[in-house]
Image (cartoon, rainbow, N blue to C red; front, side, top):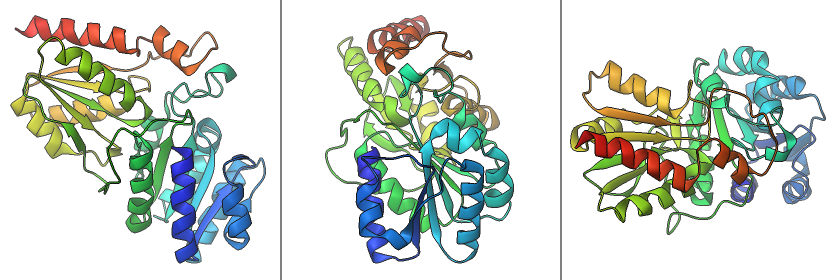
Length: 308
C-alpha cells in the first residue's frame, strides 16, 4: 500500500504543483523518487512531528494540498493537539498519512503498534478517516482525498499487502465497496486486514454460508446505507478490524445500528483493549489476538449457528 500511495501521489503532484509531501525523517527507500523528482514539493521536517503539523497547516493556509507522512504513533498520538487545533479547527486540506496499521511494526513493541488510532482520529471534529484495504484502494484514496479538500487521516499498512480487487477503482469518501454478494451474513472489514476477511469468507462459504463481503475504506464518514441494507437483508453483521474494540469500525457500526434503531445481530471482532505484552511478527501478534483466519472463522461460525 505504501508504494501505491507514493506512486499515485507523485503522479498527482507532477500535474498539480500545489501538492506537497512532508516527512518526519522517515520513508527511506520509499519516498526518494518523490524527493528527487519534485524537490520543491517535498520537505523533510526532521524528527519534529508536532512542528511538522504546524508547517503543514501553514502551507495549507497558503493554498497547498499537504500530505504529512510518518509511522502512525508518531504522526497521530505525538502531535494530536496540533492536528486538532492547527488542522481540524481551521478545516485545512492536510492529510495525515500514518504507516504501520495495527501490528505492522510488530517487532518494535507496543510503542510502535497502532491499535487506537482510528478511534482517536474519528473523535476529532471535521476529520475524515480512510483505511484502504489493498493497493487499488490506496491509489483511489489519494485521488479522493485530493478532491475532498478537508482534513483527512489516511491509515496504511506496510507489509506489501496484495491486490484484492481485480482492477483500479473509484473510491467515494463515505461509501463502502461491495466485494461479494451474500444473504446469510455480512462481513465488513476495514484496512489491511481485508485480505484475512477474504480468506475467512472462503472458509465460511465452504460451510454453505452465503457471505456478503464489504470493504469499508472510509470509517468516517461511514456508509450508513450499506450498513442499513446489511441489517435488513442478512441475519448477522460482523465487523473486522486490526484495531482495538473502542472507537474503530465496530464502534462506528454499532453507533449506526443504534441510532438507526436497526434490529440486527452484530459481532465486533477486533484486537483486545490491552497493549501487546510481547513482540513478534504481524502474523504472530494477529494470531495471539485471535485475528487469524482460523480463529475468526470459528468465532463467526459459532455465532451464526447460534442464530439458527
